Length: 295
Image (cartoon, rainbow, N blue to C red):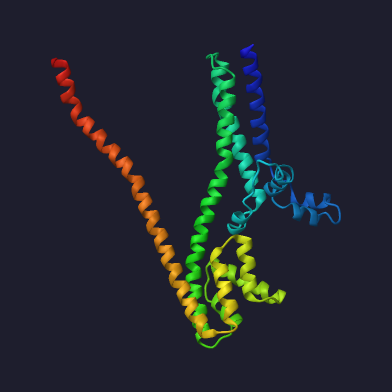
């Protein structure tokens, strides 16, 4: 009974792998033939479908996105310029890979009648699938944290530039737009897009920064928006406030980097101590062995 069940499971897994390989290596159709078969007006639909992965991702989002156990880190994904479809497709692909890997690994042993219980690959597959399911969440969280730190470094330079523009007599809006246009990195590009959107929507630039803060969870923008809101009334005080905020932000970033370096150093203490203990045991082992054999 066990051998027959193992054969059926192996056949099912093999068929699934064969279908997957067939889909991946399927030859590309002729473009001319595809265009001849395309009815009028269907070109826009094919362009909207786009990449096959995006289509599968949208299908998964429509069916799994509302489940209680599926949490989409929308702000982190927006900050990293990743789509929810790609994120959820990665999670599902890793979970399926983790679910099938123990079964595929145990299939030869089951076919050879090694006596491996059938529930062992299933339980191991569920554990590995659960572990791989959360890997994209941890990866996105760490990448978003690094991105916010990088954005904060860019904001320190932006604050100094805005302060210099204000000291030169530029108005609040002009100072913010000209300072954002100086930089070329992605933090400055975000600021440029936000300020351009503010100009198009005819809203104050600090309101655009507040919207960007709520959209991407960038706390440093909230302080800048508050300072620039006051800048419409008192330019001299705002210059001092901007420079002070830039200095305090640099201090916070340096302290965070120092704390991270200390934490990494403490993490290296345990492996170093373990290595020292192993070396001591290796040196003392011959003497201890001699004493025991002599006794």
